[in-house]
Amino acid sequence: MPCAARALSGGGNRRLASLNCHTEDNSPKYRMIGNVVGLETTTCIFTDKVYSLFTTHHSLKRPGATHVALCESVGSYFRHWCGAFTLAEVLITLGIIGVVAAMTMPSLMQHYKRQQATARIKKFVSVINQALISAENDLGPREDWVIGEMDNSDSAYNFLNTYIKPYIKSADIEKRTLFGRNMATLRFVYGSQMSVKVGACYDIWYDINGEKGPNEKGKDIFVFILCKNGGCNFNSNQVRGFYCAPTGEQFPTHEQLIDNCKDRNRGSYCTILLEQNGYEFPKDYPLGL
Image 1: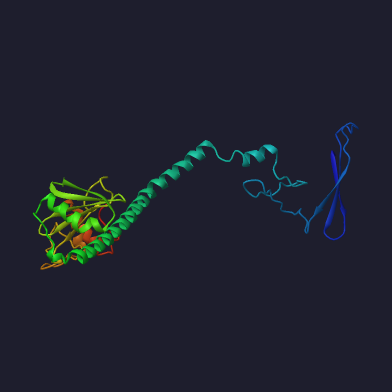
Image 2: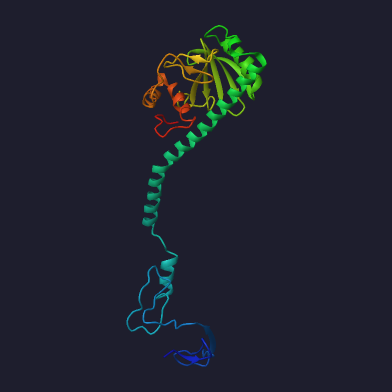
């Protein structure tokens, strides 16, 4: 027997094992001097059921075994710990991750876009309401404001330059034709913009991301209306907004707002839908951003 081991009893729970090992030919050249190794243990580590802790499963020792082998060989150790996955396993795992990502990412992105849009719309409503209040305090009641010529970019420019721009942080005002309408656009320093068309009331188009697409109502453009007398008629192109409430007509139901919001020609209904929900996007909001 190449190696012989014997256990020596010690005091308390201490065990001393004396180990003398030598080669098969007992050559003095390779003869090893016995070493004494101290082992601290509270219970016997050798039981009838000994498990290999370094394999991928707990396997019982083979019948007839006289010692515990943590691994059958060094090779098995590296097979379990260094060669963990085959190429096929890696590809299958990556495929599963890709499928899960493809299913969840669109929903996460849509949620993020809606949160961002909500924050900008709420900020816009707050800023413009404060500007209008300040303008009334300085320039008199809205009823006395000069509207100017309808469907005229000069009139729209004068409204923004007189009643809005002095009371907010903005970059510039530009006269322009937008969607076939003569309007004026005021750009905010934080990247969004508002465009105004003068009619019986002021149509205010708020674009949450400026010139970037898709430039569609209900997606990145939200339409408000401001009337001098604080009221307005309700139709497909007019929505409630600053000091404006529909008069003479029945207010649409939630289902009607949803249906009309889907129609690009009636996208202004989307703003009412948000307004009715505290400028938050309801779960059944019909358009993607």
